Image (cartoon, rainbow, N blue to C red; front, side, top):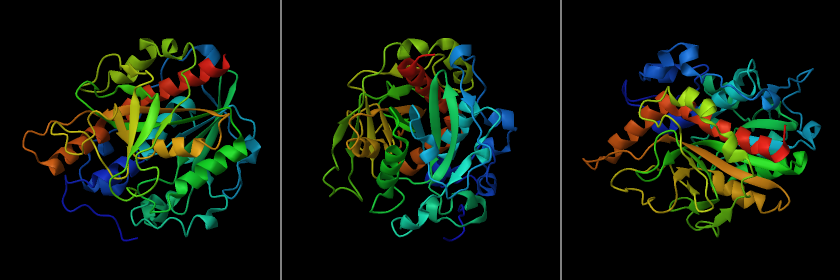
Length: 370
């Protein structure tokens, strides 16, 4: 892969930014582009710890000795839950709140049977194929992982190295998710991360605990039989929503300019995450025709729903935070709106993610008790 570059300082490759910007260790290309958050101190780049209830406080469980990168995940067979997130910023937030003291740079690398994936990942912008220096940890990698406990629950956290919209036409992420579930055999599977808010009612920092996910494929996967398919998630366990208290969510919401003081949880059976097959977002002109389809758009959760149809006994949830709201676009300049969305993400995506991490925690602790 050719060296990534931005055309001019201040003009960011927004898709690269969303997927790969690492607030733990900001890459030089983002500094060269003038991404403001890349120059902040570490404490200003990462989420603040929240006052977890002591009995259900997430606790990292480091492995001794550390597993080899070629190891499979069979040591986690029977774990209660698997949590998968997708971008570098999402993983940084997940680590800050669920594995304190073990940042993503200390998570274990997952390259088990990676040879079978190399011919499947043909996307030129896939992190899996990026052999540049500051992406070395993601080159030919299926992801990163770390175990933790939440109350009585044993939880495997994963940052995926595969991404539906960037890996090419064979969508190998479905294969990987299926293999993880088959190997670990969890009772609960959660996909979580950032997304674009759809509609003016969804504000920056809100969280969608989806009642369903659906595809809205209009480009590379438009001819697939699942291009418009919808998948219902499992019912939210009793007590989960009540556990998402203002004391937990306001800590990092207060760091987001333009967010509600207390993030709204969109948690009805009709609240929907919309998976597109390209980088889309909502703007005031409804350029990508997302309005009316759901509350947030992403690039992967419906494929998780597709994969989970093989495992009817495993409960699953899709949880997304609105890392950018509907973007005002009075000039009908979609590229300018895209840059604005990217700027908001770079400033606040890691902090909006804190709220969906808290929602993930609430679902797990309500599912398994303290």
